[in-house]
Length: 178
Image 1 (spheres, rainbow, N blue to C red):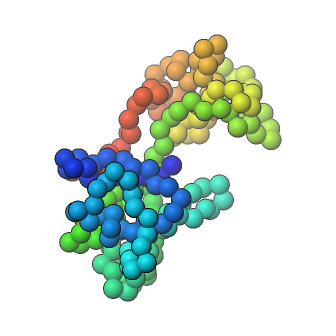
Image 2: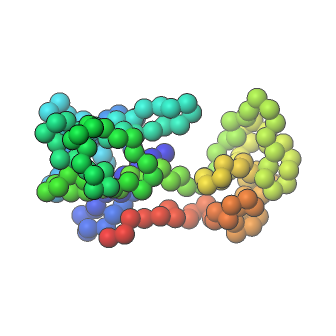
Image 3: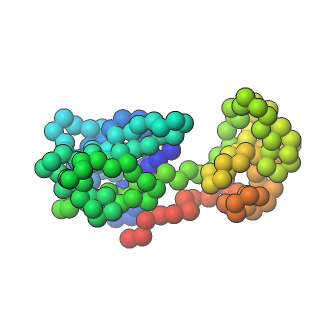
């Protein structure tokens, strides 16, 4: 799930998951705004983030009205009015604040959803059964069994294919520099 890195009351950046509705950036980035959760859009905003779906992927677009000073990675959006966000983009409103957009996902045990064809565990090579506990590597997408009987994800310190950490309590691998 995509998220924004917002400043907390202590001035530290904290990841906040994005939901499924648009966000008003002027309200979200306001110094008086609490970063306990992103706020939904308001009618008068000229700088917004909106979600959309592209195939099986959730994406986000930054929209800027003609009077907006919205910038993505320092580039004003006033001329084009929109930009599809990518991992680690900085989104800012001069004089209001900035945030960072991220698409990083952390590993977690879920019920394997099943597939049209058999999916084999990246470690033990057995077919993973629909509904069984499994982990999908957030970096390379390989599925692993993860149960008491088959602890394949946690078997090693890293994914067998991409060196992503297999610690289920690992934090984000990237955080914005202050």
